[in-house]
Amino acid sequence: MTGTRRIAWRVLMIVALPAILFAAWWFGSANSTNFLNPPLSRILEQYAKFWFSGDSWSDWPIITETVPGLTRLFLGYASALVVGIVLGVAIGSSRALRAYVEPVLELFRAIPPPILVPIFTLFLGIGDEMRIAVIAMGALWPILLNTVEGVRGLDPVLRDTAKAYRIGGVRRITQLVLPGASPQIVTGARQALSIAIILMVISEMFTAVDGLGFTIVSFQRSFAIPAMWSGVILLGLLGVLLSLLFKVITDRVLAWYHGYLQSQRGGN
Image 1 (tube, rainbow, N blue to C red):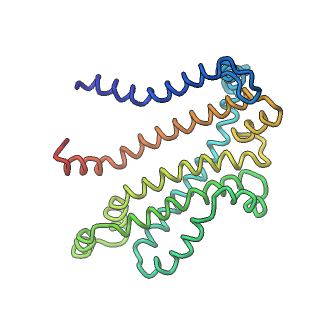
Image 2 (cartoon, rainbow, N blue to C red):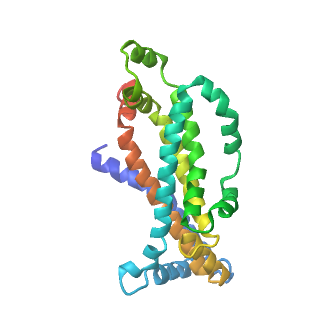
Image 3 (cartoon, one colour):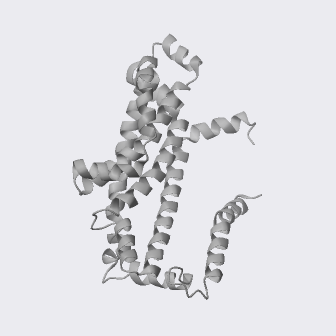
C-alpha cells in the first residue's frame, strides 16, 4: 500500500464511525417534535447562528467563551504536569518514601474530582483561582501515580549501569529516569487530560461568568434546547482537537519508544 493510500485509509478509519453516528442522528431526529430532542438540522442551524455571530471574528462566542476556559485548562493542566512528575520521580525513586505516602495517595485517588469544586470554592472563592486549582488537583493524581509506577518499573540493569558509571543527580534524572518512565508518564497525562476537560466544564457551571460550561447551563436554564445541544457538540469537537494535539506532541516525545517497539517486532 502506497503512502498516499495508507494516509487516505487512516483518515477514512477516523471519520467513518463519527460520520455514521451523525447520519443516524440526522435521520433519526429529522421528524422529531420532542422539545428536548430537536432535529439535528435545527441544532446545527443554532450552532452556526450563535457561535459565529458578531461584528468581527474576535467577538464570536466560539472565541469569547472557549478561550477563557482553555486558558484555565492549560494553567491547571500544566501545574498538575509539573507537580505530578516532580513528586512522582521523588516518590518512585525512594522505597521508604513510597511506603510512607502510598496510603495517602490511594486515599486522594479515591476521591471523585468533581467533589473538589464546592470544597475549593470555600477556600479560594469563586474566581479563576478556584477553577485552575480544581483542574490542577483533579489532573494531578493520574500523572503522579503513573510517574511513580514508571520510575519503579525502570530496568534494574540501567540503574546498575548508571551507578557503575557514577551517573547521578540531575543527569541521572534527565537521561535515565524521565526517558525510561516517559511511556507511563504519557499514559497518566492522557488520563489527566480527560479529567481536566471534565473539571473545566464542571467548574464553569458554578458561579462563572464565561466559559463553555457557563454557556451550556445558561441555554438549559432559558430552555434554548437546540443551542444547548450545539454547545455540547462544540465541547465534543474541542475534546477531539485537544486529543489530537496531545497525540502529535506525545508521538514526538515517545518517538524513541515507538522505534524500539518496532525493532522488537522485527521492523513490522
